Figure 1 (cartoon, rainbow, N blue to C red):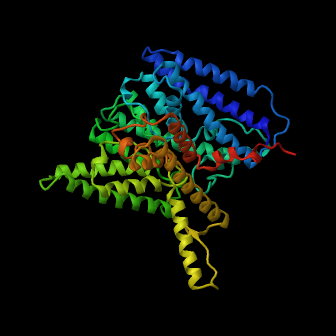
Figure 2 (cartoon, rainbow, N blue to C red):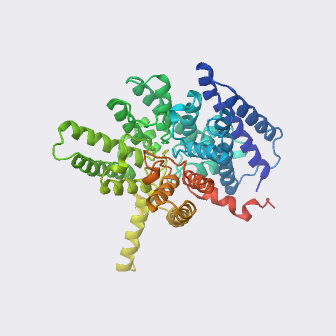
Figure 3 (spheres, rainbow, N blue to C red):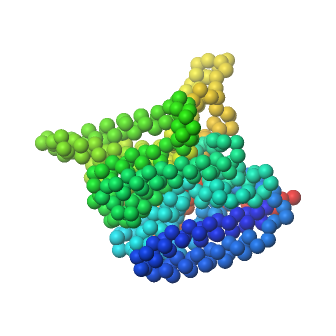
Length: 489
């Protein structure tokens, strides 16, 4: 491994993080709040970051494993330094709790240990939401969009993009990876700005619209009210629901639309499955909730049932985690749908977590091919997605991901349940929501609860699950392999 190149990228990440902390610092200045919780971390990040960048490495080789190591370490480092504002302000004095909140923010999970969010200073609430905007598209992608490559040919950017961007494959929308990063961030910023304007047109003020736009864009779910989005108007709930679905869509689709290739965009197979799953889930939950209202339910309650169903389906499938009601009291059938959506996630190449619909499609098609092989052993068959033959390496990678994912999920569920002695529903859904970056689950970690009651060891384990889920397992697991740390020969 090229240690000097890794340190160079870590240094750039810290400098970038220091610059991004100017956002909550500005908010604190505007509202007359304490500045130390932001000035001290900014100074520390700048000092360490600049030290790591003083001398450029002579050896500029950057292999795929270096990219995975950079991504894995960068997210841990961001979470460590990102928790300093919580600790310095005194809002979350415990390091483990502050680290949990920071990891949850950057990984766009939205799980929280806080029981009274409204008591936080405005600058700190904005920082919570902004960490999710940073983590949504990825700070390394942001760095690629604004900084030149550290090696010749830009191979480092290619390896970093593959390690950080979610999905079974990473397609470059244009030939150069740096340009792809700029386009992706451009779409990301454009959608965020549109949601901000739509929310501003309702009853939200600039601060509220900014916080909720940032959390929605990152599909994170951190809010600034204790009841999440429930206290806001019907208009705001519909706007947020629609944008949660948009941010769960593959960004390549938006690029195709913006460049006038509408026919290619609407032929996206994953997109139609995504919309179909949303429509079916909303229908099932709407009918269940409408019946839950009782025999005297009115048309107005029918609209409410539809709105509640649409919002929660959009929130869970996009792995955002906002809520407008305590859905843990809904009928059991709705819980089954919600848990299923927790695992499926949305599209590849977006800011959502979960397994991803494209992976599930590939697994289903590969399973169908195996059945057909049994029936017709001499037939030559291939797996196709959107009319294109899928490479064997993609199938192998998808299968490996699912097997590793399932193993980690079972192990984490066993450990959390054993360490905390919690009920199975709480243990199962706490791991499910953290590994899939959703946020709220069921039981003690439902929309009306939080993760504050877990032991320190369980919280750290769930932090690991959140990072594994956001980076799709392997950039974190590779850090535990001894061969990763061997120098180049």
